[in-house]
Image (cartoon, rainbow, N blue to C red; front, side):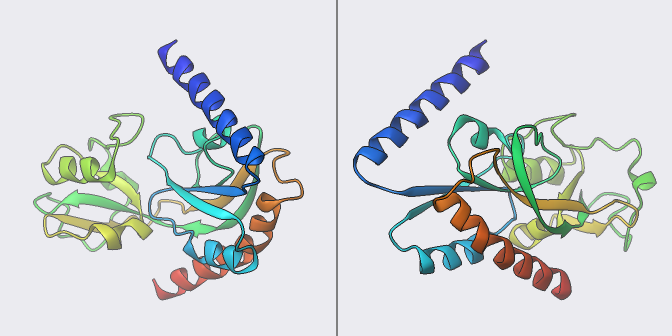
Length: 213
């Protein structure tokens, strides 16, 4: 009940703020994004065409993915599956591999690559086994020997540290990245205009990063 009350309070507060913005004649677009994904290419393309619209960004935590699209905190999300897409319109952008993050002292750390079978029996830090609220918390626990994690390869460049290693997992399937908006929320206006510009910009950026990796 407490979590539901928080959700309702957030939804109502966001709706009231939108009404106040409309009364002031303001246009604002909030873009949420999963850790490691970059929306800057899309925002640059959008603001060049629509400089009168204020664009805010909302970094997402691992465990909330689609929640800001449902409670009104964000108009658009650049997300990484899996998430609940019920009631959302999604547009595929690309695919991203995951790598295993281990402490440098782990017996597997000297390997050049792993398979999912190599990780059987390992304590995996994810939203099902042990929720961590930030990447810093997750990586501190891994470095301390409390578990391992499968993380998107796009994150590794921002969290390079001597007490962690990242190893490819050869049989782990890539995950899809996509733009998401509430169903029916992409009518004429800033959201639709953002999607029209963001989809090609983000697809091109994703392809470029894949080619470099």
